[in-house]
Amino acid sequence: MKARQLFFLFCLLGIASGAQGQDVLTQNIHWSVSQAVDLRTSASRTESFEVRTSDTQIEIIQGQVSKSFRIISKDGTWQNLTSDGTVVYQLNYGGKTGSGTLQRVNGQYSFILDFSGHKDGLKQKFVISSYEVK
Image (cartoon, rainbow, N blue to C red):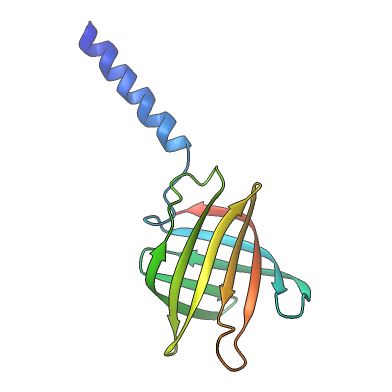
C-alpha cells in the first residue's frame, strides 16, 4: 500500500511542477508581440509578430520575413515562466554583436533587442502579450 501511495505522491508532484512553467534557457518558446517601442526615440506602435527563443538562437518572424540571431552566451536563470525573471542573451547578427533581454517584470513580459552600439543600430522593446512552449 505504501508503494502505491508514494507513486501517487510522485505523480502529483510531477504534475504540480509542470504547471509552474518552463525554463526559458532550455525550452523552445514562441512569444507573441503586441507592441514595439523604439527606446531611442520613445516612439510606440502596435505590432503583431512572433519572437521564438531556443537554446541556440532567437528568431523574429513577421509575416514572411524572418531574422535569426545566434546566441553567443546567456546570463541569468528563469525556471518558472509564471514568475518574474530575466535572461540576458549576447547575440550575433550579420557579424555584429548586441544583446537581447527577455524578462517578466511585475507580470509584464517583454523582449529588449539592443544593437545600439553599431552605426544605425536599433534598441527596441517588444511588449509580449502571450507565449506558447513548444
